Picture 1 (cartoon, one colour):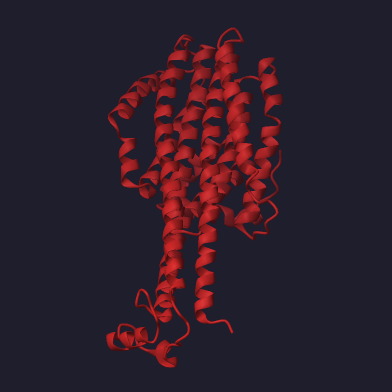
Picture 2 (cartoon, helix red, strand yellow):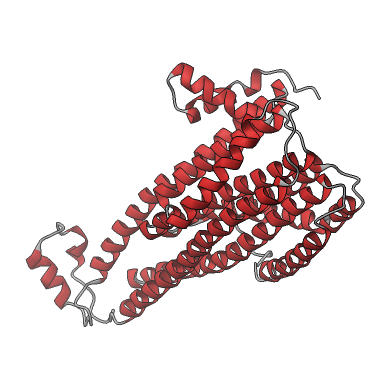
Length: 418
């Protein structure tokens, strides 16, 4: 007959299995971050190549494409380790769908590069194509964060996802600015897009500051990072304050690209530290859980506890001592003590996990509301976000509350017309 100890051991083995899956997730999140980084640089160089009418940056772009292909091969190799035959409800289904979408994008990447080689697409089309692929990769990280079952790991994944998203906004800023300088003239629409990208970076880094460990937050304000940002600010002012149609110096395209790259490379060092911390946390959690499993195994069920142990008041020292004596315990703890502690720990983990996931859910709600505004009002992504923010300010409400109100109207809105 199975005892409470049997199920306690089974619960701990399930916890270890979940942590080991998280450790595998941490590994491919790391290679996903590397793939995103190489594609971001490829996007920027492609824009410089297109803005220069194919007369410059060819060699650098081809070199970068070769690097991207190598990291893509590493990413595909890691994905092969994911058990796609495993039946996982909820987050598992969403995660697999995200991976399938990324693979579709990667399969068409060479065709995209060919169009750019032949200059059949302009900088706007090229940028949007890379943005879509990188967004798909980031969505995989989002689902990994949303499905994490351990709050300490979830916090790290939330910090990493928001940092990667902020870094992607920085990469888009690099690509858009390089195209603007390369074109030789200022466009108001692109200036507004740059301002939106700058603001979006700041929002993401604020979330990182909430969930990342203190030593990683300190890296974000390191002196060399601040100095690079100061150089970038001077170039930003040139791009964002030049009047519509005025001349920009094309030679500043390379200066802009190099300055943005210096900052993004510094961000990559922080990203690497975040992924390293994630892996270390997974390993530590697994080791701790395995040690607890070993200690559970030291319990002998040959001498059953007093049947009334279950009903004894918590904190009764004499009764706890008596219960402890009824077992041959290495650690002088009863099965009941272990079950009680496990239940309290799981409850605390659940409460913390809900708090961490709240930030992910807020992001999902805001993104859905923006999509609704974009479809029905024919707004750009930046305009939709600005509309939500203005509505929140006017009503003195949180932006997520306004987003929920917008979504509540979805069923009564007329179908969007293209």
